[in-house]
Length: 154
Image (cartoon, rainbow, N blue to C red; front, side):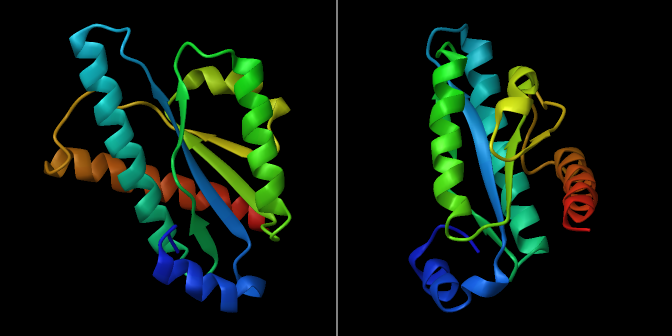
């Protein structure tokens, strides 16, 4: 399920079966070179495709929440606090498993402070979302995520 009116309506009637939340984490800034900005925008697109795919794989048991966008130069402690407040709200509804999905390796330093599980994937700096190569990389990452999520479930 995605954060859409139709899917949330289904969630409301099926809460007891939906125990897993996926939250994409995406940095944002305009204080970078043009190439860096392009790379960040591409990464945002890829992470959203990746998360939509994983949500489809676990349809009926998971919800894909809106992308959490944060300033790339933001105070990390403040972001951890905000993200944890969001996670606690989600866990009260009652999502047993919360997964933060990101390409940003900086989150690894704060992984132990998060009220949820961090899934960090190697970053794709550039590419074409429609190319077979990019689609293959995304599907490989989806497979890795599926295996990891199932480990948490067991």
